[in-house]
Image: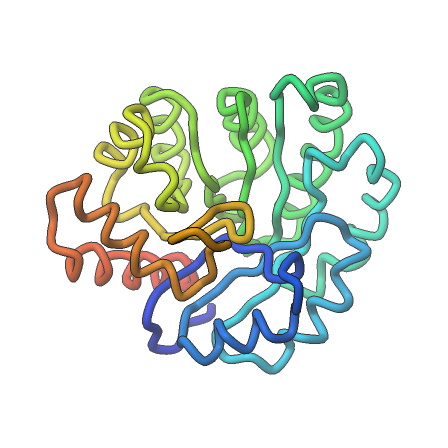
Length: 252
């Protein structure tokens, strides 16, 4: 059981090791008091991420094997398994059935199944999961291989259907929302209808832009404002809910 320190916000999915200066990006998140989950895309990146976040108060590192890299990096799955005991956080993992990556989809599923099974065996892991054009399959696999009492999934930048979203919530999943999601009609509908007690905020920086530059953890204040605008709520209500949701997640 873990509690988060008092924060100025939550960035539950960010790639700090992909900024030009990894250490400086971590330092900025720390200075801003943003509870930040910095994800990795390959197990070979894990050691450095762990080293830089071992003593941070607000920044946590997640052990990942990105589905878009499975075609060339699946051989690192054994390395991922060896490192799993070193962290509670897993990500970025999942499936991507988009046109560029569909040819590796069956291989992605084999890797994702192993990840879910190892997380279930370990218990208590928190996973940040990619589900591009694959939400029903991702949810099927979560249901089959990661029982709710054995771990918790946070669906990152969720773009599934309303029915998928409702099913995910019933499976105990959370949703990490970024400002980009509120810029499309479909995204706004999803953000409006997500259970408020399952919403976390994210930037997915540096893959998103904020005011013409790569988004950083401190920019989650703008994400909160975007969610509040879409849901017609006070920003303080959304911000308080996100902090409470993080505490609930970490206590699971």
